[in-house]
Length: 170
Image (cartoon, rainbow, N blue to C red; front, side):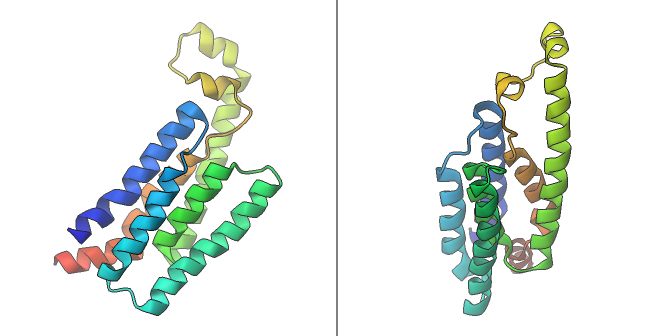
């Protein structure tokens, strides 16, 4: 049962956050809350020592310090900052966290360029009746939860909780 929760919670939360950010330009607070609460509930079953659990929390705090700074200077939205922090807790201070953050950064850069190109050609997009959410064309923000989702889904199989769950299945 624990393994199923590990395999499902983070991916579903990231996908839901990406879709709500795409269509509504917001990440509901309940998604990072679910990620943090579920990590705390799952951690005792994942054979994490108390020290390892602490390092997972410290990883979240470190990511929060950086993304809060980006939020404070209006570079990143608050929902995206909370989502990235909550997802980082699932990775801990491991190489998988670095891989996750690198994928998020590159994905965010590509996403930003694509959205700026779509906005530059907004008249053409609307004339062709392409199914682009209105928020993409009019908002001044980038739905960065999409990049967080892509980075998370790509690196999720490397995360310590997934690796431990796979070991327990065998």
